[in-house]
Amino acid sequence: MELPPEAVADIPFPQRAIFLSHLRSDGPPNPRLDVKNGFLWFYSDGETPFLASSMLYMKVFPIKGGGDIVFCHMPKPQADTMPPRPGQTYFYAHRDGKWVDVTKETLPEGVDILWLFRHSRRSLVLQAGPYKVWKKPDGTEACGGDGVRLMDLAWDGRSFRAHTAKSPEFYYGD
Image 1 (spheres, helix red, strand yellow):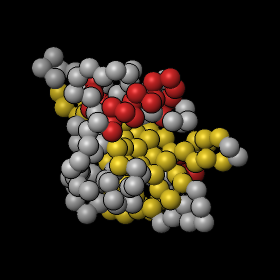
Image 2 (tube, rainbow, N blue to C red):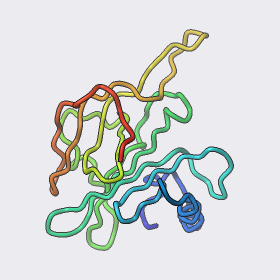
Image 3 (spheres, rainbow, N blue to C red):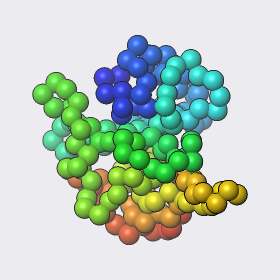
């Protein structure tokens, strides 16, 4: 509710309660908002009663000793087929009563912030890799969809550790 708008698909503060109600209405067996597991997956299949600039994936990663890191990813190329751009992936921590962008201190070296990141409900691993790129009939490039999964980022309670992906394919498992 308190994260900066750019971290939550530009959803304005006054519309956040409506947003959460919308997610909660998509109940079991596979809810898009799972507070117990710190998991949120918003995608729009049509009209919504709030403004959002894209899909939104969020995952809470607990910090050893207390606190959390919140992963916020807006896969805009999957929505508009435009190339990835800055401002679609963030990591935030709550420090001194405010949310602080800790993206640079959280991601390991060699991880491109413009990649696609996929989270899961129960796992503390993020899948990461570039978006798929293809040629449109007019010869221009389009971007989106699941590209090649290059690495898995495993949370150890203090930071993410990069590992070679077990598979080149992204998966949506729990």
